[in-house]
Length: 133
Image 1: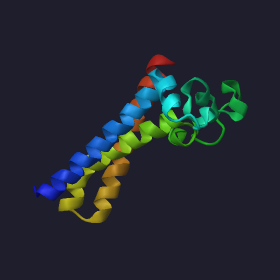
Image 2: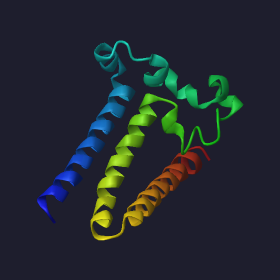
Image 3: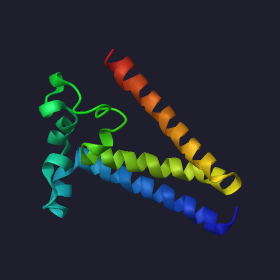
């Protein structure tokens, strides 16, 4: 593997880690995030309240705000899930990058989509079926 390709993979992994750090900061240390980004909209960035953005009128009992707003498109509803989406996107891209290097461009896109779908199925199996029953 060429050094430049290795550096791209490492950069993608670093970005994944950075977004994981952001997600965990939002979840466990929101006051520190708020101190650094005082102008950030808490209704999007504060997980204590932003989690309701995925539901109609912010009410869990009314169901999803739009199709897949609490699943595949949850990353559009709040900062925590947006951070997790980018964490997953960058690590998935790092994994799929070798296919791009050795295959045709569309194989990279198919692998990315497949990895994301597999991840989503795994998450939903545990979150929706195993724990929520």
